[in-house]
Amino acid sequence: MKPKMIVVLVLCIIALVFVFQNSKVITIQLLFWTVSASRIIMVIGLLLMGFLVGYLLGRR
Image 1 (cartoon, one colour):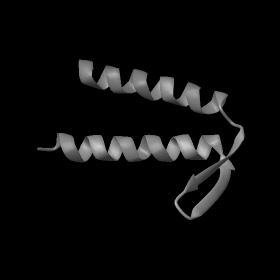
Image 2: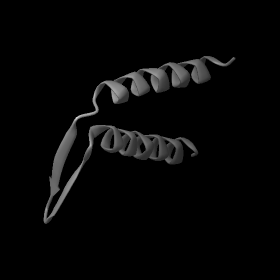
Image 3: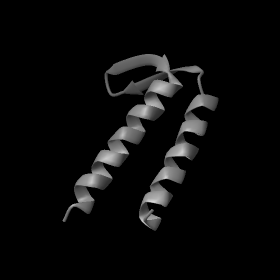
């Protein structure tokens, strides 16, 4: 296995542990919108956006 793939796998495992330990319902305010949801959903959404941005920027 490539070292880069091992690092990605370890980071994914750490992210999953973090997500499942933070399951409290939170309220997020962004300008005029207010959203109440589980912290799990918020963190997973942000992680997916981060992976997508990293993937798109890394394709150059």
